[in-house]
Image 1 (cartoon, protein in one colour):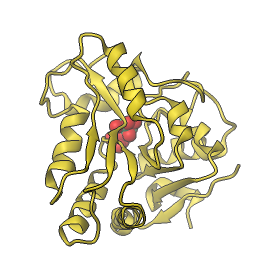
Image 2 (cartoon, helix red, strand yellow):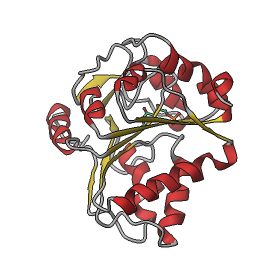
Image 3 (cartoon, rainbow, N blue to C red):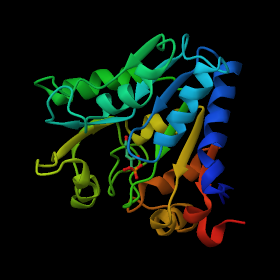
Image 4 (cartoon, rainbow, N blue to C red):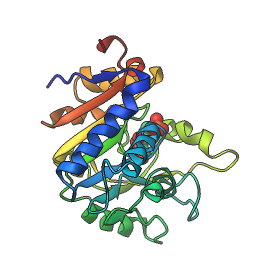
Length: 240
Ligand code: F6R
């Protein structure tokens, strides 16, 4: 299936995506939504918080499911995905979501934590994703299949390098837990968020090259309700 990105100027992109998320919450207050961390959604979460504070949407009856997590970081570490989703979104909302499912990466058995999180990742209305520079979605790294389950997996050097700036002198974890491609593709709707010129090449591969495990984001094109929200820079020649 050929998917055209929905392209916005950088200045309006986050507000547009946040506005749509607010609309989903109004239409379905019990929305079960899976959210990513990373840098891409930061301005979207800022805009969603502003809308929630203005009374334009509420997570009060919604369930938020975290997309992925590093293994081996101490609780409260600012680089942890659970810390980032709390400080970037959840703790700033006027009312918390009815449920927040983070990933218990402190479990001595990360495999058991992944298994539990897989239960939380069932029956999702909406999965919001960022795009890795190597084509990963969540931590579904290159080599993942469309039916890859929620699991613990070793991270590629590319993913670890991309995160290095957040770690300073600390070692970047070597493993992560991610919701699987199977659960992502089973959601009712998927939104892929992509910004910045550096993502233009991988976005083009994800949307235009033949589907391949080399670029797990390319599997998303199988989904009948995939929407890709890109800014001008990321859309590059695919844009307007
Ligand atoms: C984060 C996640 C990752 C990121 C991706 C892009 O929860 O699942 O797949 O979405 O690595 O990261 P940024 O947005 O920092 O470019």
